[in-house]
Image (spheres, rainbow, N blue to C red):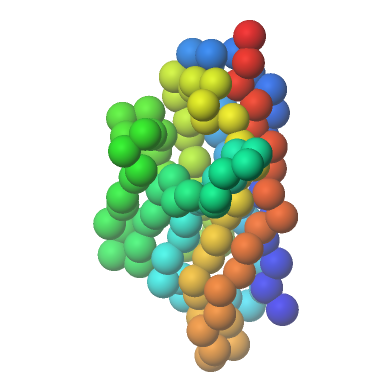
Amino acid sequence: QVQLVESGGGLVQPGESLRLSCVASGAIDSFHVMVWYRQAPGRLRELVAIIRSDRDTKYAESVKGRFTISGDNAKNTVDLQMSTLKPEDTAVYYCYFGLVWSGHYGEYWGQGTQVTVSS
């Protein structure tokens, strides 16, 4: 079975930085896509950043130039470096992997980590 564990959330002030990490456990063959989503109270879950197996990355307009996604297939990890944080970045952040495990494709979610940006 594959499990995703996130870390790095917390409370920061506007303008500060934070780095989220997500590690996948299990006998993973390959990754198709690694994604960070977020969900603020009362709002739908939204895609923040995505990195594909060909290393192509895409970002939500609201985080372009401030957030950077990076993946390490050898370590089964995906990170999200967040800079110049704003109060509107406050949300629960979730990682999502599309991967092949024991020869089967599957989609997996982390449990979520809270990011709060407030003065």
